[in-house]
Amino acid sequence: MCRPRRTGFGMEQDRLPDPPRFGSPRAALGGILPGFDPSNVSHPNVLRRIVGLAPVLYPGSDHQSVLRRWKLVGRSLLLLPWTIEWFRALDTPKMRIATAIRPRIFAKLQRPYLTRRHGVAARLAVLKDHCRILEETLPEEAIVAIYTHPGLTLATIELGEGRSTTLRLEYSDRYEKEGEFTLGIYLSPGEKMIFTITCVVTQRPDGKRGLFIGGLQGGNDPAQPEMVRDLTKDMYGLRPKAFALFMAQQLAEWVGAVELRGVADAETIYQHFQNRKAIGASYDALWIESGGVLSPSDGCFDLPLRHVERSRDEIKPNKRSLYEKRYALLREIAAAARSGWDKARCGAGA
Image (cartoon, rainbow, N blue to C red; front, side, top):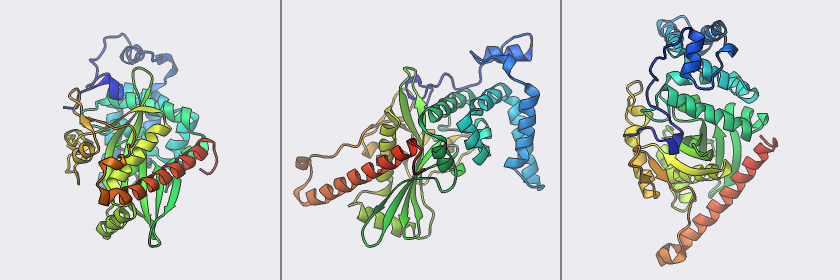
């Protein structure tokens, strides 16, 4: 089971706190959320924003759209203390930019998030940490690039036979339940999506950062199998999903993470009762073959924080040339992507 674990996510709990017994609704909010100042919150303002947001997220007069609008308002009222705190977390200069581009962010608390066991309080804690880290880490130009399609281009690397791969850091509504940052791998000509890995920057109780991977997705182009073969060949035998994990390790380094974790098959959001469906490929298999270790405390995986090249002596003689070329290419990609990240952090080239 993926029970709360403070060292991985900063998860305080996995269910709603017991309702407090206070004299007024405003005092109740202060009791539910430690450090929360009820005097700074206006219930009518929040409710007006929710009602105004509903037709933006779910336009249309059809039955399904109307039902979704009612659900949004109803769930927001049910989760009102946490909704208020979430809206406050989003009321910062850079997050206002993000939500103007991606208004669905306002409704994140209402959906399964990261793992099937993240309750609303745990979702709020992780999301607030990520918002604060985003404010501290990236300038406004980079925020705009990440949250606007097609995302922030980190690097484009020339490969064999006229092909190239482009690496992007983006926010995707499609993967909104799996994390906040999506690393996309695209293959040209045609700029087809080959693989994505979605993650969130977390903060541990000791104040240090972590990176948690909540989702892996392959492309759905009819030519996907052929494109995967081409990219694997161009990467000297490295499969796209292993390449995606390599890029997540790079991102962990860029944001100063001291741990890298990944969700297990049994704990994905697709095992949540609101979102149940089969996943296309096993996450566990990739984590295990990459050196990941299943944590007995929460059922999720502790992953290698850095990519480690095998020594020449560990490689069969007939494979050494292949691995040397692969490692040289990975070093080139890592350097190019880091340069793209550094430029974005400085407000250039975003």
